[in-house]
Image 1 (spheres, rainbow, N blue to C red):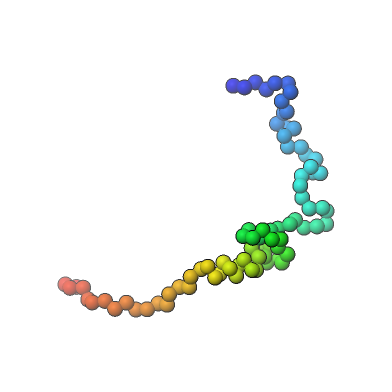
Image 2 (cartoon, rainbow, N blue to C red):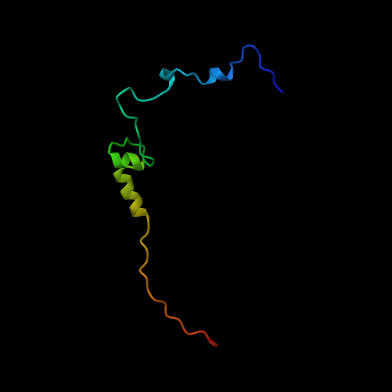
Length: 81
């Protein structure tokens, strides 16, 4: 086991309670939210909630393949049934 030396910071010093040391937006401004795909800042409410901008959302929809139409499968009857 390691003994703490007198010069080591205590666990209480690791997380100061001074809010001015924490990064964040200035008072009265909202936090910057960026697109998870391209990193551009998001401005619209829906885009900020999604975390993806409108342009990247359209690209995501293009990537998904459409479902093939439902078609009945023609099969021969099983023998003995």
